Image (cartoon, rainbow, N blue to C red; front, side, top):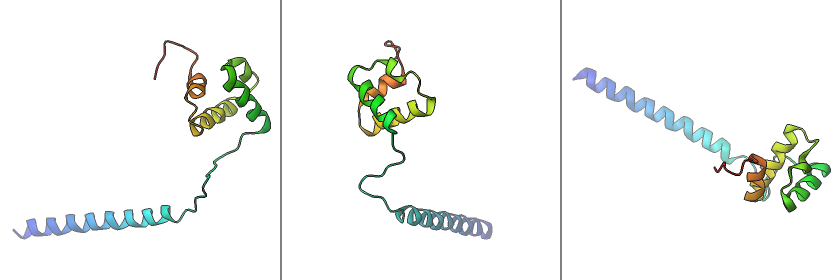
Length: 99
């Protein structure tokens, strides 16, 4: 019976320790100042122009000359804008491929 009691106490301490660590992490996350508009990156003038043109007709020729990071930035911008057609067009050009 003493072993059972010891095990229960040890488990209780572990649970309490995990809850305390979680509380500290939550407090740290809550201390991060977030503006009304939280921006991780900004499109360059060229990227913004390409994004605007690409939205009009989803023609991948607009993307020629862009590096992979710029295309990824356009994809993230489409997600932020909730522009699902642009997001999908940047994801794949295979019409039969549906998410």
